[in-house]
Image (cartoon, rainbow, N blue to C red; front, side, top):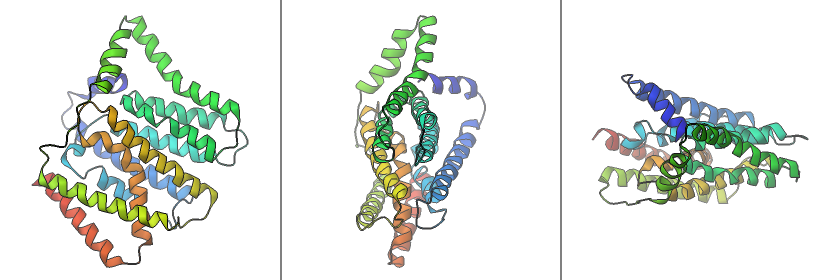
Amino acid sequence: MPLYEFYIRGANNIPYFHSVFALLLVVFEAIILNYILSKFEIMAKKTFMPAIFYCLLMSCCKPLTHFYPLLFSNFFILLALFKICLSYRVDVAFSTIFDASFFIAIASLFYFPTIIIYPLIWVTLIVIRPFIWREWIISIIGLLLPYVFVVVYYFWTDKVNFLLYDKIFFPSSDSLLSLSNQRDSFVLVASLLLLLFALSVSTLLKGWPVNTILSRNFLVVLFWLFGLSILSYTMAPVFNITYLAIAAIPLSVFIANYFLMTKRKWIMEIIFILFLVAIIVENYA
């Protein structure tokens, strides 16, 4: 996509820049996620667990340790989540709703299937905001505005067809998804992730520990974000775990909540140690 191409052209010839920048992006995104949860009191207690699990999930297998477009997309999705929380109990939220939609559009200009995350804004307008029709219109304007500038640029350079077909249509429609030829270590990591996800969901079904309107509504937003991130994977050009990186945002919150709320600490510690060992084996074996 255009913004990722712009970044690659500028940084591709700098040795080790991608690796260092990827590490800084992941850590900074973990800090932003933790800040959102702490500032708006989403978790039962102030903790760095969501940030820790976000870093682990974003490096749990070898493909995720390289540079890829969703590192940028996740950053802007987190900024959109921050704006979503700011819109709670605000009489006029035109600017925050516009910003949230604008950030999702910017994220999609790094990796186009991120556009599927946009309905998250509508979910916000339903569960967090009272109905104000102008906010719905403004959210659409915020989504379209970055694309207006991009289309004008490609039209000016006589490359509109190149943008529509080579960058958007064919990579998203000509998908080839397969789970074959995966290493055993990857299967182990995936199995432990599924186990953690199942335990987290079972804990969430018993109730969210923070009984505030914003925390419950934010939980709904996170579930939608997880579902939409899985849906966006259907537009991935090939099977690659990096295209599921968006799901690391809600998953890190769900898993952190399970580790905070579980009463069987020994089971938690065993699973956590196994997960760390599996990550090390996957990355270094």
